[in-house]
Image (cartoon, rainbow, N blue to C red):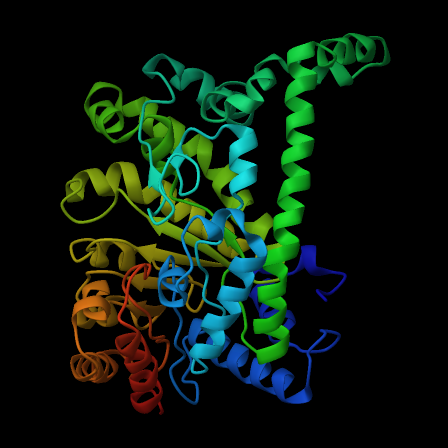
Length: 447
């Protein structure tokens, strides 16, 4: 439990309180004392790395994506629609790899929820795609160029009344929700609720209720896998919440890649103002989810800031300032932003390091960044990991995997603040290579 005076603590004190609560086994329903001991040791090891300390050995984490389905012979659609089978397959995956120390997030998703919402932003197996096809992102321009001012003026309101009905037609009636100022005075209230009684609005609200019910049904099933792993096997969760860089919110799913890159030239001030307006929402999204889960880490995949995607000058002007503000806002609440640095960030390392983010408060999983340079620029103040190529898991050999892990450990583990991880979400791997990666991490990770 967090202390009663938590709100008045400094950011440093908040982080220590959240980490202590996460590491603690007191009051948690562990199946055995041995499971509790394993959990405490593993959680403390990971917390030490986050705080840039030297643990007893390097922790090993992974996002396993579709890997669990492939290695257990379960179809991808069953991980969207057959919750009991998906839960059983997930537990089978855990028993097959007892070297796993931390709960590995996978693509175990609530297909019926997406169905009832008529979600347009993705296609997924068992609906528009075949049973063994991975989900796909449907990029588009879901926000017009003429809507910047409305987004900037009221991001929450615009997202509720305009964006949500476009990407979730099942909630199209939300476009008619009255302005909430209508609740501010007694004589206004009847008019507000008369607006809420419009058939399209009430239909959308009923859909929301049903989607919420279906979500809790899904959470009950996925809770079985969490209960088995965390409380039965002592595997801490290292994912508490999600957020994104404000520029990625804007460029990925509002304007779309083509449109946002044109906007950098046609309406740069609007882009900057939109990123600034989205920053508080990005912070709140991360902090609220992490606090609710009791897991003080917020996963932030970095998409459009990679080397070659935009110039260093554009990165410095459009991408980094609002990302830095988001990171600082999350850190101020005692939550650890865990950046998933997709692509290469070799030309970005020095600039990010110059920001002097607080030591021991962030984590960075690198994809294709030079790890010697990452250690040089980030090692003194941040936890780093990643860089094991996804291709090595699928096309390499156990021997080549062992060699790669040994070299990576030699490059990065000195001085602590280092965790072992793949450079990407693992949708595919040869079973022997995945096992070899886990075994080599244990072999070469000791201090």
